Length: 169
Image (cartoon, rainbow, N blue to C red):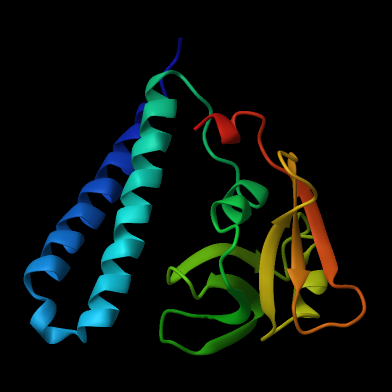
């Protein structure tokens, strides 16, 4: 069994960062509206739980999570939106798109127009600013689809299979 030590270290570091931030939010919530603080605590706890499950999977010799559908499925039942990316100075870059999760304030995926590998850019670009939901094709399905709440026609605009091991964690 070969362990992915680099990914394990990164995941442990992320988990520790989220745990420290959660402690800060719990202790210093006087700076936040109490309802907003509680929402943030729940988001952080969800991220920590996910990272813990992912770490256990990696420590058993499991494969890394794959960009795209594995990230989409993590945000099932969340509200996503397509937004433009920014450069280092904060300038809007229309050749970079982010699928942003408004539910947990996280980037779900990024798509670059220039990349020959990214054939999904135009499909996603057609839904810029729209509310997107990742939805499985059926119960226990290995296929996740991005659906657009703003479009009457072509609600489903992108589908892909998730990793076989994903539901095990």
